[in-house]
Length: 325
Image (tube, rainbow, N blue to C red; front, top):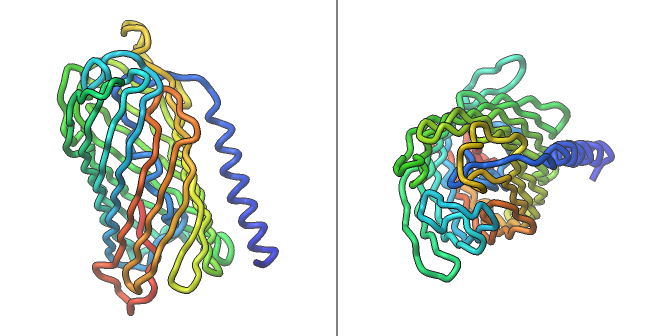
């Protein structure tokens, strides 16, 4: 690896560490609130770069078991959701449709994306009895722009914006009894990727801001998502390490009238590994993570899968860099 590449990698790592320092403040989250985009969902994806002009479909899936470490109050799935030791089995299918446009803005390539998460789950009391099986659509994620600049040979930086309106399945007294939420979430994001010499070294940061929950009057505090990927291709195979963190960085508002513990500061940090294979136009990746630190959140093991391929490109097909959001 060249000295230039080492400097680029150092910059990506430094940006990750700098943002990581910001997540140490105490704050609070309303019981039953789920952050706009799922933790770790962009692991393995080169978020700093747009694919060549065309239309792409990325099929994301994940399944895992998480255990709650806090809240201790009634939540969307019943009286035990949020209690220490309560468990959730959760699976997701997330189709991601990306249009990488032929246009540039201020020297940046421009893509836009539509994402529709679908979730099925089972909640269990600490003793093992099942509470409920909420399933349905999460709020749709609309990305009107992801602008990507090549800052140096092989090194890309991107600015994007996700808008998440309340289109999912919403029910219950708090509006949080299923996987839709009566909240609009705005997620600006910043990503960096080094993609030369078979490397995918990516750090991606999402800053989520919520409007008021129209059922409870609570405004859930802002959060930071951090997804990190360090992977290397060996011919058609890809191996690597991943990490993610989700942390609240601002307190809830209008939570004082709620029962003690209804809003609780949440964070989760996980580490894992990645293996992938490039079939040509299509690529497949499998990622496994496990939480190493969880507070007032659900943490545990999770398996992520990715199947990405172009639906249409305006140039001859070549090895595909997975579309992302």
